[in-house]
Image (cartoon, rainbow, N blue to C red; front, side, top):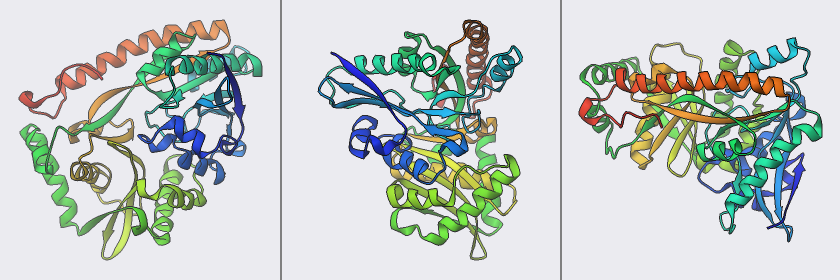
Length: 390
């Protein structure tokens, strides 16, 4: 089936109907609503080093059959799959690593589809292959160092590996709902020491006078977003020094996706002092941003992790994805899960060096994942999940 590949420097050139027909409804981070809010708020923009350059695959009749989110990057900030060492080595050798191409959700370490195909397409595998080949061809056409597809699915990683990409894995920690009806059901699956520790942490927060609310839809008001933006800026100022998300982004998120928003707020003495922004998917609660003006111990764990588990159990969700990194999540019931990315490097020498590095890195990560499950799992042996990395 003949196809044609094009690019778009503005997601509005593709349109909500065509984009969402490919993206589907399961993961809000790849929705037109979320990505257009990134662009329209100037959060993902050429000035921030995230110039949109989305790739489009059209059938012979001009129908958009597939899309992939894509950006021209002038740096490696906001990606969470770190390639700083690659860039440094290449530039020390006289190469030019930036600009590069990045297929990702800006500032969001959320696994999800990247080679996105219309659900009703008769040959989705062909469209995914066409998108992968199109991505691999762009660096040569544009004179760029390469293209990086991060937090894609394992299946997509395999498709891209068949078309010249190098596969990479990482680890995140996700909570899995095994049919729990209450938080106590979840606790009962843990070993005694971890169960007691979680109860102690939750009790400590309650006794300190905090109360919590999970706000969605029209329950969210402007003052909630004003407050949360203050928390967000506090976090970025302390950790990174730069806030990519503008205040307007949260207004657009409210306008376009508020039914998928779950904003957990923590209040003390009638004042909201902390918050965690989550987005609701088809069967997953995705934790995204957190911030606080209160440094009370355990407040972060309660607001981000335990409240998320409560929400997932109440709504019958299968998974809580609580963001990047964080081995401290293990003792709170979150399990190691492999994440996937794919990397196409134009320069043969750079590609060979990174291929060797990734081979060793993958073996280490898979060993770490298995070791965590076998030696550090908080679950009782008889309730422990299978001893294989996901």
